[in-house]
Image (cartoon, rainbow, N blue to C red):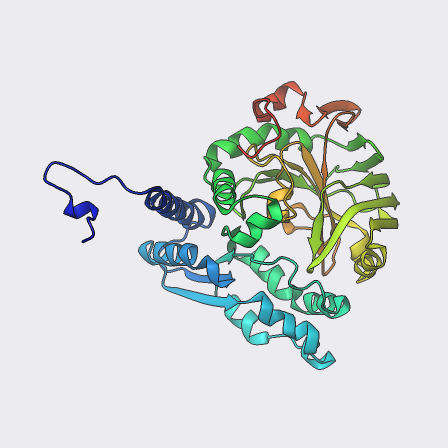
Length: 397
């Protein structure tokens, strides 16, 4: 006989097992995240057409919660599009030139009816595309670029991740730790965070020259006349940035990125770029220089920058080779090769937008118009000190 909780003697209650307690906590956090996605981030409302793009079968718990929340908020229609990286891989392995070059016009036709776009990914193996033809991948991304541009510029959109064993393994964590890390970085008071970001946005809007100094890094640029935007939980979860773009031709010097990255299933480490007149004139990467060159040569805009940003999420303190997290690391900046966002448009156009992260430590400094604003990875400007998290060891909690 099995004695379940509702079979307990009168006046007694069986204590839930550790596994049951864990499931209850996880379910609560999934619903909380779904509420942020559909409420704060995209503001799903009555009559909306919602598109949910889901990648990886393990994202179903969050997918179900988001779908349910959209219906409860009165969405007129919720379209779900599922994809599987292992199947997409076959296109790059077996696809002909004509198949790679085909533009799915029917997808754009539907997207033009969409009010809200939500992307959920459960990454089991971020290296699933590692062995495919890189040129095919880059060409196909260029073909699909109009879909991304419409989604980003014409819908209320957000993207997020769902924790998996694959993500945990890549980050060097247990699944339980990965869950705590993801939910800890996502389930924040984003309205309060937005208010704390505002002084940095205002300061950057008054800034002309930016100077970034660190070991093997000496980079200068102008952000004068370019709009400044807050990334405060509306488009990414986790989130936490203030971003802009440099004046296209203003970037001079060199920068060594110390955060590992993945682009199109290809791993890159220790990327170092040299700029002259805003353009990358030299690029090296550990064991990946040829592959880096292919990306830089994909189109005219790929060697120019489309973004400069500060990472500000206080719950993200270490790299995990997942750009949705890594670009938000507090005490970091990132630069994006390629396309600029419409919000902070410097005029650069490209089929890529590749964020590369520099994490600051001892001996680093970021200055605005000759005055230091961040030293050794912490803000020193009086108006920005409220952004600094409490001092602690480099950990996940």
